[in-house]
Image (cartoon, rainbow, N blue to C red; front, side, top):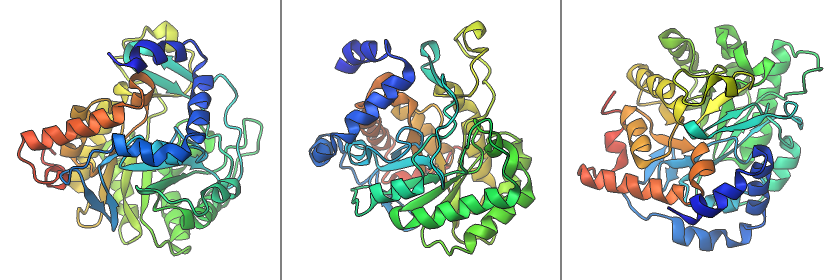
Length: 363
C-alpha cells in the first residue's frame, strides 16, 4: 500500500476523470523547477536498461505515452518521474477543443479508462513556443495528428489531411527528438480509417519525405486488420529511410473479456486503455517483429503496461521501447520507478547484460 493508493487515488476518483487529469497536468506544470531534484530520486541508474534507437540514447526503455500531456504543459516534471522518454500530444496544425464532454471514464474493475477526448490540444504554434529552448535529460517525442475541428465541421479531403501531417511535422521537428505520426486515432472520423487505404499512407509518407526530416519518425497505426494490415504498413515504409519504426494504437472497439459489466460501458464511446488492451497489442508486436526489417525498424510497445513483467513481456515479444499511461492513474507517479527497478531486477535474474539482448526472443 502506498500514500497514492490509500489517500490520493480515493480523493482523485471522487472527481470527474477529466477534472482529475487537468489537475494532474496543472500540478506538473508548476513543478518544473523541481524536475532535476525529482529525477535524482526516481531515476534507476543501470546500464542494463540503457538502449540506443536510431541514434537516440534512452536511459531506460520505459517511456510516457502520448495522451497524458497533450499540449506539452508539464514535460520537465514528467521527465522528473524517472521515465526514459516522454512523448506529448497528439498535436495538430491548428488548435482543437476535441470531442464534446463527457469524454473520459474510469473502469476500476479493469484498471482501465475509456478515452474519447478527440485530440484536444493547443496547436503547433503555441506548443512550439512552449518548447523553445527546453532541454530534457531524456528524448522527447512529439505525436502528430490531423486537426479535429469538431462534429459540425466539413470533412477534409485527402490532400488536406496529408498536408496537415506534413505541415505539423515541419513545424514541430526542430523541437523534437523523434516524431510519431498518429495515423489511426480511434476517436475522430478523419483519423480512424483514412490510412487503411494503402494509397493514402503512401501519399502521406511521400509528402513527409519532401520535408526532409532529419530525425526518426515512427508510425502509430491501427491494431486491426491482422497480418494483411501489418504487411501493408511495412510495404509503405519500405524505402523510406526516415521511418524508424512502428507503434500500435488503441482499437475503436471495446475488447472482449472486460470485468466491468456491459451495462456500465455500453453507452461510452471511445477506446479502452489499460490492461484490456494488452492482448491485441502483444499480438501486433509479435507479428510485426517477425516480418519487419530489424536492421532498419524497431517497435514501441504500449497497451496494459502496469508492472515490470508487463514491460518485459512486450520487450521479449519484439518492442525496443515500452510506453505507459493508464498505470499512472491507478498506481500513481511512483509506478514509473517501480516498473523500471523491477525490469532491472528481471534482467539481472535472467543474466541479461543489456535489455537490447532480449528484444524479440519470445517472438
